[in-house]
Length: 153
Image (cartoon, rainbow, N blue to C red; front, side, top):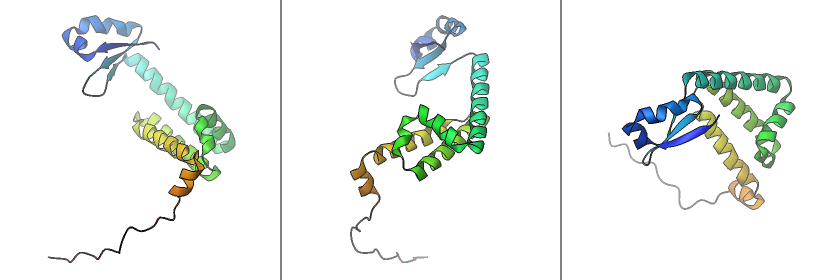
């Protein structure tokens, strides 16, 4: 789908100039001091949500029956998965699939997006062997053990 951008202030000044764009495009309202907003027709939104739900559930079925194939499908779309160790790759695929399925069912995809960002960052760390070794420990302490505070009640 095509998207067109407008300043949020243009929408506030004259929505009748922006709204006709929705006939053939989604609209991004750009805001200076906050996240941008997206306007789209309900029919397109519902179609995207239904398509996502079906795709997520179909991928989940594939993952249950053939985990290697599901991993291969995700690795095709997320090439950075190859940087993860095998055990973490499996954990990543499971977690992303679970978040994707839950998000498709509820319409709340932010947990999926956060997990995706987190796993991508983890993969980047694993891509640097020196950094990966350093972050696995052992970690030196930085001083004497602190005593438990007294209970003043």
